[in-house]
Every structure is written in structure tokens, then in C-alpha cells.
Image (cartoon, rainbow, N blue to C red):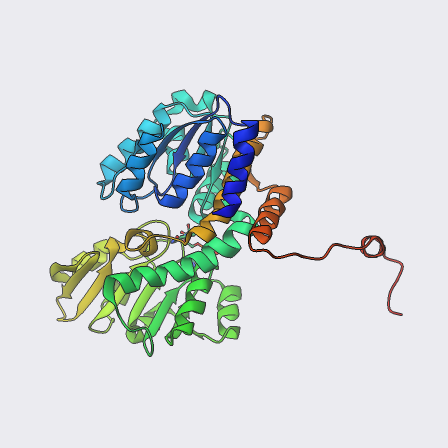
Length: 393
Ligand SMILES: NC(=O)c1ccc[n+]([C@@H]2O[C@H](COP(=O)([O-])OP(=O)(O)OC[C@H]3O[C@@H](n4cnc5c(N)ncnc54)[C@H](O)[C@@H]3O)[C@@H](O)[C@H]2O)c1
């Protein structure tokens, strides 16, 4: 992770996070560990919990404890244990929070309001978290400023698209070893994550079908060469289904009933709510675990459906999440945004975009790490771009 390493070096020299208490709710993976090391180098104290009950890598959690991070995370937590861990992090009275899905912010604003006065600001890593925080802001309930790291160009354009695209397929293959070539691969949604997934699935020979609720995104999918149809129809043709919408019950009873025998169901959206597990259970006569992360559901209509990773984000629960190179950029944005929050104490309690200079700094560091150089504007060009008088020659 060369970008984050450069930031870590700067942090260890300047100690911009001296006396800062960080409370982080992030997937506890090796990439997160590198981010935590950068914060430690900057002088921060850290309490960390997982942002999903299934995504913690236990060896990483243990290694971070050795380095002095207070870690409240282990793999395969129950829902109550998951929220207990988040409450422990809230209890550490962080001055800055880092979230992936807004569960820590939510906990501090509902069950741990006594620590609110200590918190100066926070960051949010993912689309679902940003949506929840904007909802809080609109209701006037958000009590401290948040930087929406997800919305940085150097985050969603790479992490959501290339990271999720590749690692979702990795999770599906590790779990099932299915041949994607020739399969009808239904993707629910055509947002950043889904676009990457569609691109990669197509590259592996799958026939990609997209379902959408947005006319613009549906049109984009059609122009990119994919079949677009409503879920009711897609459910009849699909061999593999992947949800990536950030929405609720996108695959539900009326779709599950129509599916072909042997269909695979996976989710890559943040929460395990995109495939209705309640409906799946309701239609099922028996179920059994047939491989790690793969549950076979025999429906009362005699067909078998296969659910991957309990409907949790398949790339993290059944594989290793995004490749480190991708997280390098997302976490560089995180690190620089935390530094920005520490330096700028007077921000309003709103959801703020990542400052352009941070986005550009991350992109420049990444280009340098890839040994790529770009051009600079000449003085003549700078002037041309700020005038209106000159037209065609
Ligand atoms: N698995 C990962 O590692 C990972 C990484 C980044 C983001 N995420 C999560 O993935 C989800 C999607 O993120 P994104 O950045 O692609 O969001 P996005 O907003 O760019 O895209 C979501 C798309 O889903 C569509 N949609 C909403 N409801 C739908 C429905 N009922 N049927 C069909 N389409 C529907 C929307 O119109 C939109 O085009 C979020 O929950 C996000 O937090 C996961």
C-alpha cells in the first residue's frame, strides 16, 4: 500500500494526531491494519470494532492488539455481540469516529449520547453509511460533521467499481467454484459496485442481466451492452444473482418462487437486507450447509436455491475484500480526511464532501506509486481556460 505508506511516513514525522482518540468501526482486515498503523504513527490512540459480524480476520485483530489498538472484533459474531463491540468503541469517548456503514455514529447518537460532546468529527467509508448520515442530517439529528469519504473520486470510482467488481467474483468463485462462462448473471442495481461487477462478469463470459429502478442507470446499462429487465422476469432466467443496491428486499418471495433449480444468491451491498432471508426461510422445507459459506435451501416447490455467506457482503465474508491496491486509495482518503478534521475544528454538523485537495493528493500519490507522470497546464492554457472571449480560429 504505497500511498498509505507515504502518508504514514509523513504522520510519523509530524505527529498530527497526537492526543487524538480515534473510534473506528471498519472491516478488520489487513488493509485496515495498515491504516491503523498510519494513525498510530501519527500519535493517535485507537479503539476498533468490526463493521460486519462476518468480515473480521482474527489474526489481524490479534496483531493489532499487540500494537496497542483496543480491538473489539472477532469473526462470526452474533448481532448482539456485534452491537456490544460498537458500544465498547463508543464508550472509549472518541474525538474522531471512522465508520463503514454508520453503525458507530448511529450508536453514539442513540445509545451513547453522553460521549457526543467529546466528538469533533467523523468519516464515512461507504454508500449506505452516507445515505444514512444524510437522512440524519435532513432530520436535524446529526450532531457532528462527517466527511463522506465514499464520495471522493479516488474512492468510489476505484474501490466501489474495480474493488467490488473483482472481489465479489472472487467470493462467488471461492464459495462455489462455478463456471461463469455461459451463465445468466443477474445484477440488481447498476451503481458503482454493480458496474464493476458487470464489467468483470462479462469478461469471464457470463451473460449479464441488469435490474434497476433508475431510468438513467438502466439506460446506461443498456448502452453498455447489457440486457435490462425487471426482477420478476430476471428471476426466471438467472443462474447467479448478485444484489448491489444498498436497498431492502430487492430479491423477495415473488422472485424466489420463480427461480430456476440450482440458482445461486449472493449480495455485495452493505447490509444483509437485500435478499429477503425471511421470505427465503418462509418458502423453504429444509436447508443444509454444504460448503463453508454455502447454504442449500430446498423449497417446498422442490427447487434448490443456494445462498452465499448468509446474504452478507460476499466479497468480505467469503473472500478477502478488495485488493490492497484499491484500499490503499480509499484509506489514504480516510487518513487525510481525519487529519483535516483535526485541523479544522469549526466544521458544521453536516455531511461534507472530501476536500478536492485531498482527492487530488491521493491521486497524485497513487500516480507516483505507479510510476506514471502527467502533463501540466502551460500558462497560455491556464489563461485560455479562464477567458470567454476567444472562440474558433
Ligand atoms: N461489497 C463491498 O465491498 C462494497 C464496497 C462499496 C460499497 N458497497 C455497498 O454496495 C451498495 C451499493 O453501493 P454503490 O456505491 O454501488 O451505490 P450506488 O448508489 O452507486 O448504486 C446503487 C444502485 O442501486 C439501484 N437500486 C436501488 N434500489 C434498487 C432496486 N430495488 N432494484 C434495482 N436497483 C436498485 C439504484 O438506482 C442505484 O443505481 C451500498 O450498500 C454500498 O454501501 C459495498
